[in-house]
Image 1: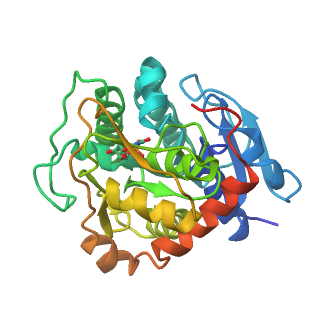
Image 2: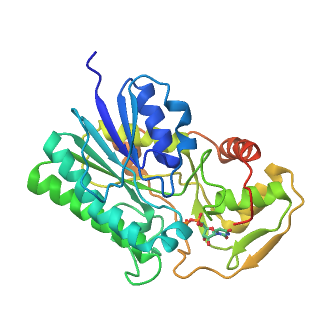
Length: 317
Ligand code: UDP
């Protein structure tokens, strides 16, 4: 059998594990690579028995060797939650720069198509709203979030350089806030934080006055967008996210309602450089991929709440 073969870096993470699963479902062979700093074997346990799945425990900031041919390389390795990249600032910068360099070098050597998991953080605290791909962003390079934002911006620049200079076949997905099963209960992001707080009957911690906005995409929708982008011929960056925008306070109330909790909402200081608004303009994805999110927030959250009921956090983060 001559199945196409994909390498997923960060394959044991939240998005990476869903991606590995989808690629296997599409009939590809999948090499999952992860250094397990923020990813977890628990996310991919169910894939070990599947034909065509292999796991390599490796840090992609070091030279990557994968025996055999590769058709696709999907670079999803990186700490991705604000508290993770604040705790792991150097690793975050290294995986976005050195890790992307290694992964692109491998794509070049293999003649493989490369897809970069980029982020809405390249827009920083945006001055244009919603954010189209043509917006260059408003990033504080030396602020605490700069380690993630600039690493991803560098990764995009490097990807385009390999595309233009070496002719590597590349794709760039700018991923907006995504949620779903297999998020880490203690990763500090608002979705696991609020759901776990509501389930435990603890107060929900809204940062600042809770008036900042985010737009939440369910993981299945995101993966569908990534899969379509991978198979498209669009080399320029593309936003993949759900444009349904809400304030963090509205989001907290929605979680309390869906969990059926009596938790109250308390206010905590706003982290430095926390973007005030965020909403993807997905006209490009609609036009080029014929893609848009299909899962309503209420349904996606119900599945996520179910996951956290079954996987409660052990201690308060
Ligand atoms: N947030 C919050 N309470 C929390 C965690 C996060 O109010 O316990 C806010 C955070 O300040 C931000 C938004 O929720 O405005 C989304 O935060 P998250 O860490 O999920 O990701 P971000 O979109 O900032 O990368």
